Each structure stands twice: as structure tokens, then as C-alpha cells.
Length: 314
Image (cartoon, rainbow, N blue to C red; front, top):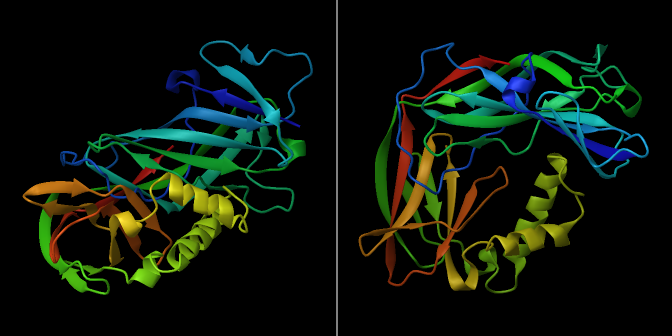
């Protein structure tokens, strides 16, 4: 079975479709906090569609189905067929996407109902990697449909529903000083900070890296992105993005209510130092910074203010 990917520009579709998203991690850059758009002003529009279906033999890799719709054939795939629709939301003060709030009211393709799978259950779910523009002016999320190979045709899916878009009107800054000694703790607003012990971050025996790899592997499996037992791939992923601070850096564990956290940095010699890696496995986050010198370090965090969630239609 081949994999067929449809790339659509917003104007290529006359009907809006939907995709679920997830909360975006704290931005490494410092966007300006704009006033939020009036309630009901935002709407999601489809900008990309991927179709996993058999590609008729002899067709070229790139096809034009009319207008600005482009079809690109993929490699062999035996996943059973399905769709992925990516949506773009424009507004102001957007800070995240509540993928748990995703609701699909209808999903069709070529006139057929694809909202249910072969067992009669909902075929849709939120995609794993939603994103938010640094200036809060836009966000993307994905809706995935798995109705079963026999019901997937070479037709553009049309999806309707709602999703929660998180917004804010501004930011407030809080700072704390924490000892660089392993095991040290501190409070920063609603957050608890901790410098992991050597055995926790892998400096002593690599156990921390193994735990991170196991957690990432499980998270990837839950998101449908990898085999839950592929710890080696997860470990490689961690290494590719710098892992935690490790022996050549400074790790900082953050727990508590992170929902309002917009940004977190270290302040060294009066200059802000951005984190170079970030991991979250549902029990808190670990931010990896470059190595720091001295007995203590200042931590600065920015929190969203005037937060609300707007239900957006697609």
C-alpha cells in the first residue's frame, strides 16, 4: 500500500476541516504579548491534508488535481489507511491549544462518512505536535482520522468540529535564586525548582538518560510516533537535541502548575541564557541549559496573565 499526501492551501478547500493539537512548550524566544481577539473572532482553516491510501500504478510522484491541490505519492505503508488534516488558526495573544477539548461533529471523504472506524468507534484524535507562533498571531493543530483502509479513497476529507484555543493578554515576571549543588530546591511562583542529583541526570551511571529514553519512548508510542519499546531510538532523539544539561551542562527540573508558564531562562552576569533542550513526560519538565559557574544561579520565568480559552470552530 502506498502513502498519498495531499498538500492544500487554505483557498483550495471550500469547507473547513479540523485537527487536534496539544499544548505548546514554553517558547525559546520572547514574543510580544498582544491583546486577545474578541470571542468568536478566530476560526480554523485547513492548510494541509495527508492521505494514506493505495496509489494507482503508473502515476507520477507529483499530481495536480486542479486548482492548488497537489498530491504527492509516498512510500509503501501498511498502516491501514487514514487521513491527517492540519488546521491554521489566526488571532492575537494565542498561547496554546487544548487538544483534549477537540470535538469532531462530522468527517466525510468523497461523500462517505469517515468519522467512525471499522468497529463503530470514533476514528478521530488529536495530532501530537501542535505549534504556536512566537508572537501569538497563529497556531496549527492536526486532526487524524483512521476509518479503515477499505473506507479511505483518493478524496479530500472535510472535517468539522471545535477545539479550545488558549489565549492571554500579557505576562508577569518572577525570579528566584537556586544553589547549583545537586539536590537543591527553590520556589518560583507556582513552580518548584530542583537541581537533579548526579544519579538522576545520568552523570553517575547513565540511569537518568535511560529513564528519559524510557519515558520518551512511552510518550512517542502514546502519540503514535514510535514503537513503545524502541528505547534506543528515544535515546538517540535525546542525544540529538542535547539531552539534559548532563555532564557538560546544567539541568533544572520544574514541577507544579506549568500551564501558565510562557518562558524560563537563567540570568548569568546580567544576560539571559535560553534552555537548549526540553523534556516533559507528564510528571514535570526538565530544562537543559549550558554549564554555569558559581554556587548559585538566578532563574527567571514569565507567566501568562489574563488567560482564557476560546472555543474555535473548523
